[in-house]
Amino acid sequence: MAEAAASAAVTVTSNAFALGFQPVQARIIAPMEIGSGVVGTNGLLDLSRDGSTWAAVPLSDLGKFDSNTRIIGGLVNLSGQPAGSSIYWRWRTTAGIAQALHGVWIQCK
Image (cartoon, rainbow, N blue to C red):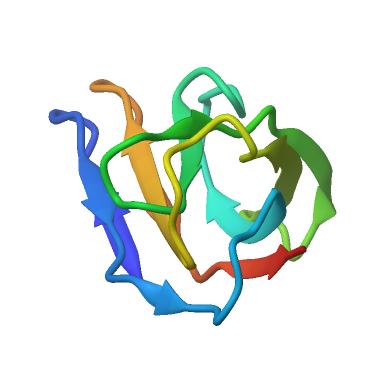
């Protein structure tokens, strides 16, 4: 899905996913290769319902997908964001750590 070389910090932002309702809470799960990096420090995920106001997701390591890939995820409250009936995700990395994001799964309510 997306890869970040060790030399550069990268930000990848999704297009809008229309929900038909205004989400107040969202969960994101993603398989990520983070090498020697730390989940939540070197690899970050954010969610938004308007595409410009972002909520940082407190991430947890949920286990191994394979020998190189971790399953990470977290839950975030979106009720303080501007109104919107879509969901956007954003992946941010820090320089110095090669990483790969292999997909995202988002659940909203």
